[in-house]
Structures are given as C-alpha cells and as structure tokens.
Length: 88
Image (cartoon, rainbow, N blue to C red; front, side, top):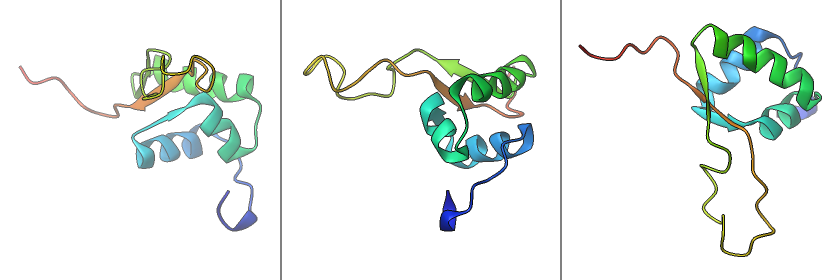
C-alpha cells in the first residue's frame, strides 16, 4: 500500500484500484488491500454482477506460462470494463 498506509477495502476502493490499473489478479488486489482472497473475491463478484468488471481466463496475462511449468500458477485475473458499451 502506498506510503505504508493500508487502504480500507470497500467496493468503491476496489473499483477505483481496478479502474486505475485496467486489470489485476485476485492476489494483487488482496495484497494491495492486505485482505484475504475470499473477501476480495466477494467484492469483485459484486462488480462482475453489476457488469463493471469481468473475469479473464486464468493465466491469460502470464507470459511465462508453459515455459517452465512451475513459476506461474494460474491466477484469477479481473479486468475493468466500466461503462463501456459495445458499438452497434
């Protein structure tokens, strides 16, 4: 956390974090807020249900996947989609 200050994890702070980053793994968000992954997943699921973020395929953002088979565990990645509307 910035400056050694732990941020309070709320739906709004999680939203802002993802909005700023574009996407983040479950463990990144948990580490950022110093929170348990189950708690983080519950908040992320709230935003998924609202259509603001979407889960990506596990390991989708890992460039090392398959190269050594051990350094890259499958991660749950979430992407901010916000108020995007598909054209048409």
